[in-house]
Length: 262
Image (cartoon, rainbow, N blue to C red; front, top):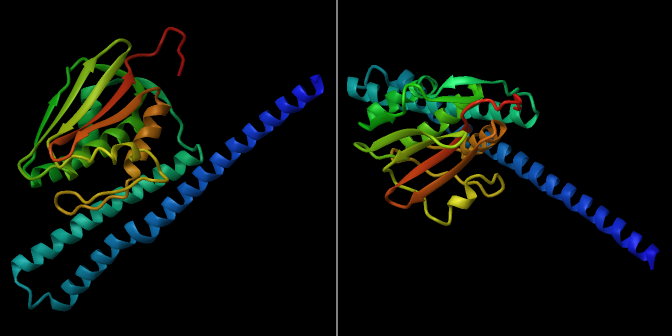
């Protein structure tokens, strides 16, 4: 009887190991398939646009009027920006998966860090006549890695701009809670269907949606955000109502605890 119990215990242990390994392989394959899909389609598509309009400008420059030239140049500019953002996320994701990104936590002024992180995307908000309001106290401090948190803020703000219609609003709040700072990026954009929200942070089911100006995305940005926030000891979640807007909410430790734990 004792021998059977020991055998049963060992068999259960090995089955659990096999199940965990199988889950790891599913995740690895999902990651590989996602990256190949991005490289094959999402990264190739904007480059086709860039090359196509450059070719048009080269061949028809003399017969195009000034408005047509400006239109083509703006299309090239938007496609180049989208390609750069996607390539940057791909490189970050690749580095993260191979544990090449080192988390070095320090005290950061939240308002200053956020302002630097979103600076590159403010012109996009201006072009869509989106009103951006930052409601973060000047003295609010978080304890986090500067590089990864800036990447999170940039991705979340860029998403808000992408899915907010012209003349819309984006508000960024920062409040102090017990041992945490909560940061919320609100937009009154197109929102997310309820059934899609649970899939936003799952690479095997992750989907992307066109923005209000047909901006393309890979869905990789939110996956990066989740990984980077968790590496910093925080949490991230999305609240949304389709047709009414979205809240991206994260929590980050306010300061290093007394033992200096990371």
